[in-house]
Length: 234
Ligand code: HEC
Image 1 (cartoon, rainbow, N blue to C red):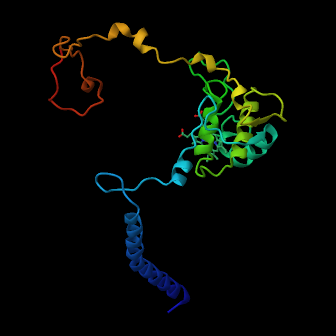
Image 2: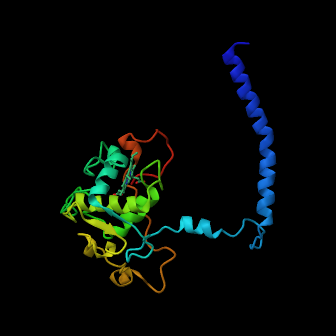
Image 3: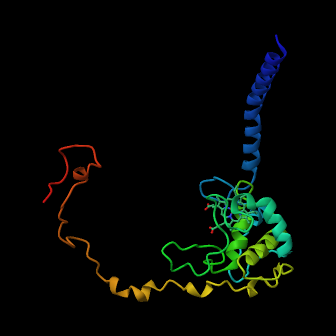
């Protein structure tokens, strides 16, 4: 038996051992889970542990609720951004290739093709903190410490000309004092008043309008396979 063949069969053997061991591990896990008191009617699942809830509960609200203690400067954020983010988002947030753009776009919101970035569009800075902490860097989410997230968000503010000083430090105390340029363009859902005319007490549920008139079929422009079936064209 050659060395490599032997290595391969050893690996196979190891696989077989693991495969037989797996059911035992599984049974053990089930036994452990069963011993945790279940509260549901069906006896399924178990209450989440406080540690699990804490790990999930990372949302940060616009009013700053949920911000963890921490701090970071623009300068520190610059270094981190170049290392962890620039390969996709570009050195200055301009976006590498077709990856998302994170900076610029000021004044483009009314253009045909607006550049919606954190600086030009996002109404609250908390969204940047929450999202980056939760989801970035892409493929290695939740690898940043809170201080690193503060520093990177400070650098994003600088790239978007919202803060000018590279020594500016963003922290949990001054976070909510940052006003985003597009903050005032967002307003609460006002459909109950602005669309009041559409809300009727007795909505029409039957024969509300006459049947539409078919004036053409996709087949005539050659985009559907030929078939005799289909509605008659008027
Ligand atoms: C491997 C590429 C990659 C890396 C590295 C990366 N990102 Fe992203 N980023 C993405 C992709 C892809 C999206 C869009 C994800 C989606 O829409 O679901 C995104 C979205 C974002 C957004 C939201 C943009 C918007 O306007 O919707 C922010 C903010 C962001 N990334 C920040 C960061 C930061 C900060 C880092 C570094 C810590 C980072 N990203 C690293 C690929 C990357």
